[in-house]
Amino acid sequence: MKKRDRVLSALKGEEIDRIPCSSLAGCNGICPAGVQDEVNIFWPEAHKDADKMAKLAVASQRKTGIENVRVPFDFLIEPEVMGAEIKWGRKDLEPSVLEHPFEDEPESLEIPDDFLERGRVPVILDALEKIKDEVDDEVAISSLVLGPFSVLGYLVGTDNLMRMTIRQPDLIDELISPVTDILIEYGNAQYEAGTDVVEVGDPVAAPDLISPEMFDDIAKPPLQKISDGLSGLSLLHICGETQPIIKYMGECGYDGISIEKKVNIAQAKSEVKEGVKILGNVSSSYTLVKGTPEDVKEEVKSAIEQGVDLLEPGCGISPLAPLENVKAMVEATKEHGRK
Ligand SMILES: [Zn+2]
Image (cartoon, rainbow, N blue to C red; front, top):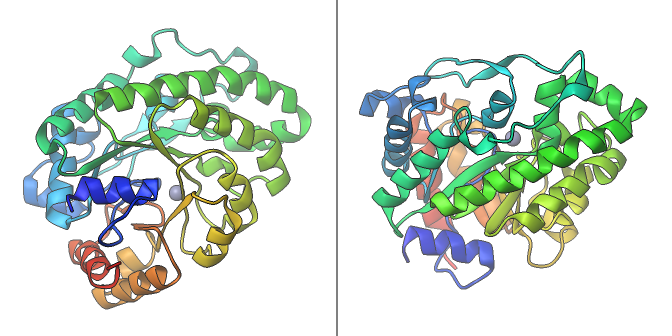
């Protein structure tokens, strides 16, 4: 099977020859620093230049054997468009937000009318077109929309947002609604540009920040609205120990749920609605970065035995992951994932 067919069929529940090894979801892109050295294209320049981004993303797929190409490499596109100042990091360090532009006056938050023309949005869409031209229908392409709760968190500050969930839940509803609409528009523009799968990653909606009840009340409705509004395959990713909210995540309407190492695959499968695929859960921050290729292979084997539908890192691939570990993940999936 072609890599793209295998990945998309696995997500749709169609027949496949083996489980794919992809990295469609998670907070990290697919771009070990080792690949940057090999092709001489580096972060942070590649975060801002469509040509460099596309070349680096395609090279990362080819040099690791992962069965999809993915952009962007960071998840701060939307907060940046809406005014967040970015610290750009290094080849082995992701960008981060320097300050939250609406910390003092959340009420003044407005979505720019020309969102799709602003900041790096055109860069990402342009990179997706270049990638599609390059890989055609051989390899799956995935891309990312930051979840609405997280966009709001980066704009008003996470602590502030946590306080608002208790003191001003109505204000959150009011602010999150236009954010949700623009995220749907951005996600659909990504399909038009060539992506196959849009991941909605909402790390600020994780159970170590908000309670499962609050997730159900406040974070779930806009996530459902996004999955309803997206015109193609979509995934939901939330970091960390998401076992307490897996059931709710499964109710959000996505084709698949991406989970980290701390979540039990078999239990997650039993808690989501029939047909929702589980993606994961090799440890992105520990095993893939600090483990040996043998450790990685063990985790792959165990995830497949537990019934994972698509073998993936739990939260994408850190730039610090040695190439040999990423390759070991692909090899072990080929070895153990036969249907
Ligand atoms: Zn994550």
